[in-house]
Length: 154
Image (cartoon, rainbow, N blue to C red; front, side, top):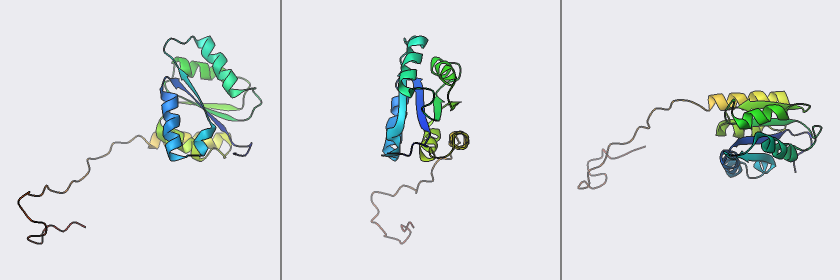
């Protein structure tokens, strides 16, 4: 089990995003992702009910530092998360993506403010335009492999 000084990570997002992100994180970090707290918010959930669920998941305000990650600023998960911060050693990032979450899980033993910065950088640097991959020219089906010596790819 992780040291008690490790920051907890709480994902609260529109259903089923939080659970799906946890599953992805568990694929990469089989042990570390087990410590993620997750709340999927159904479309018809009342904000007060969601807040009560989130408070039960997080426990008392003095339960230790927590990094809260939500999907969309201004939506119910983010609004609930903002209310959760009161009285807690907690920070909130919105716009969660997989690179942000993986960075958070990887560095969760760092102090909360350092973890917040790592998560933010991971999330923003994880978004980029990528050029198409260079593919080798298709080979003729009638040509035997290495027939003319031009078929070597290294």
